[in-house]
Length: 259
Picture 1 (cartoon, rainbow, N blue to C red):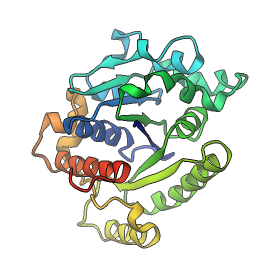
Picture 2 (picture 1 turned 135 degrees about the horizontal axis):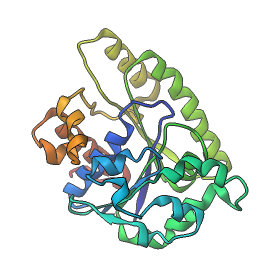
Picture 3 (picture 1 turned 180 degrees about the vertical axis):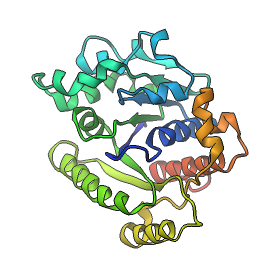
Picture 4 (picture 1 turned 120 degrees about the vertical axis):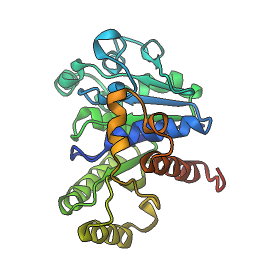
C-alpha cells in the first residue's frame, strides 16, 4: 500500500528539501519504489537530483491545474527505484491560479490517484509557506515529516505548523498524522541544540525521530553535484544518518522492526 508523506515547515532553510531527497534516496536504496514530487517553485529537489529545469517540460503544475496527466510528468532519476515529478516556475502563481478552481484543496490528491499503485512511497516536498500548494500536499498525505533546526525560533514556528496540520486534519483529511519531527543540521557542541532537543523530546516524545541529522559538509555539497548524499559520499555521517531515518520511516509506516 502506498504511503504519502509531506515534508513541511513554513520556515525556510531547515533542510526540508535536502531531507526529502535523502530520505527518498535511502528508501530507494532499500528497494522501495519512490516518487518525489517537487511542490516548491524554487525547484531545488530537481536540481538536487541532477535535473536542469530548462531541459525538461514535465512539471507538477499542469498536473495540479488539470491540463496534464500525472504519468506524463514523471522523470526517471539516476537513483534506482526513484522517480521525480519536477517543479516549474509557474508554481509561483499557483495560489492565485487556484483561487477560482473547484475543489482547489484536492487537486493534487485526485490527480495522483491513478499512479498510486506504482509506488511504495510518494514524498511531497512543500514550499516554505502555508498556501494552496502546501494545503494540497496536506490533503493528499497520510502523514507529515517536519524537519527543523534546533533553534529557539524554530520551536515557535513548530507550534504554528502543528496548528495548521490539526486544522487540515479536522477540515479536509481525517487520516493526516505527524509521522515525526526530524532534527537537522544538528551540532551537539552547542548548549542550545541540546536544550531544544530535550524540550522537543519531553513535549512530543516518540514523535521526534531517534536519529538526528548532523551538520555535515558532504550533505551540503551533494546538491551541487546533482546527487543525494548517499550517492555522493556513502560513508559520510549525513548519508548514514538519513539511512537510519529511512529505517525509522519504514518502521513507523509499515510496522516493520527489522529493516
